[in-house]
Length: 311
Picture 1 (tube, one colour):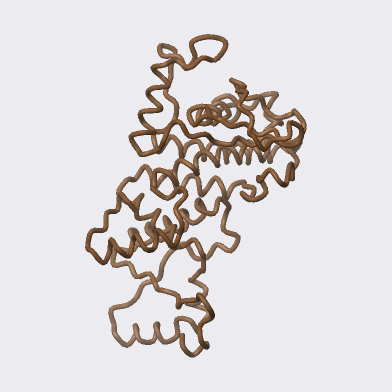
Picture 2: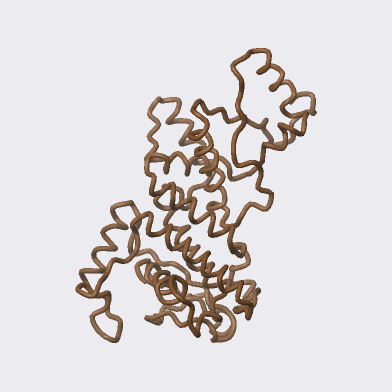
């Protein structure tokens, strides 16, 4: 690396991830890190490289040849990718590795983003409505539905969906009063994985009032909304999870109906946003600075006390 010149301010040499495992396990690790990177960024990788690793042979002379030329030949160099968020993606993969359901949740949400997504910054209220809310093209409806189904399935993998039934209904009356038993159940499962059930989630609603009406329609409008272009709703977390299931149950999981054409990028974004928040939280990475995470992991490694459950 020294042959390429001195490092700039704040730069460091890249690191090679070496996994001592059989090929399938090694590729599972690499693919999980890549999927975690997509979840962290909240948008698909536009330069998605090779999703599997390459084998380092046992022969010492072959190893020497690989390492000598690894950054100087296209065959090897193109297998590498650079992401500022990579340390956080590794931490997420480590936190998830011991729980296959979290692993599947990360992969499902990653695939949802790859199916359809808008950038997180474009949902910021300062930009108002950037995207058309609906499309008349049938293929768009299928793509949006697939992205929503994958994102909600990620929530189900974490066992953080709202559980209700005919015998145990979600609501007590036509005013959508929560059944205390159902509400207590989802709150207890959130608390069990370290998520505060009293948190709120911003549900993006932009432009004219042609969006799908989520039932129940709550009145908790965000403080930053203007009531016209930006009409975002501040949902309590159980209500936000319910809203995701409402879209999945009544709009995307079964045969399409007359309201299907009203699906659009903001419905997709909202379900992905809730799933992403839950994955980040369950991995211990919500509102965690990369610098603090690196220091935490370094201290744990040096002390020989690294705990995968803490990330």
